[in-house]
Image 1 (cartoon, rainbow, N blue to C red):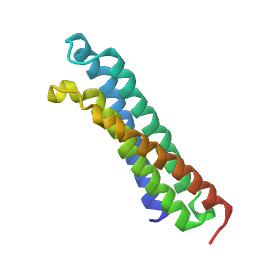
Image 2: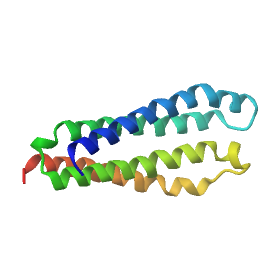
Image 3: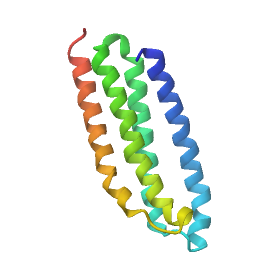
Image 4: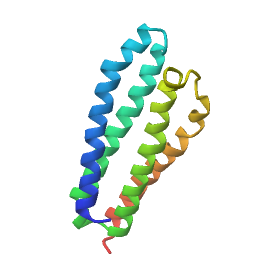
Length: 135
């Protein structure tokens, strides 16, 4: 994975964060009012958006600082952040809207979320190692 690829991933993830957040802010209220979704589910959805956006910024930092970093650790940090976004934020998105979409709450998705959190932690640690030693 190279610098441009990481910056592009950051840009795509950031754009998706804004789009998903806008959908959540404007589209989910109607589901709550219709009784198809609980108000607490909006908070869960917003948590997914926040963490996706935070880690989009982390990806951007990796991309912009790539020339100063250990490339292997930076690439692995990037993969960890992307995996964390998919597992952490993705599971929260699906958990919060599953009842409205499928008629049943997919509570088992809550068991996936912590694995995404672990990938976020691994990504930050790998970023530390990427900055510690240039290869």
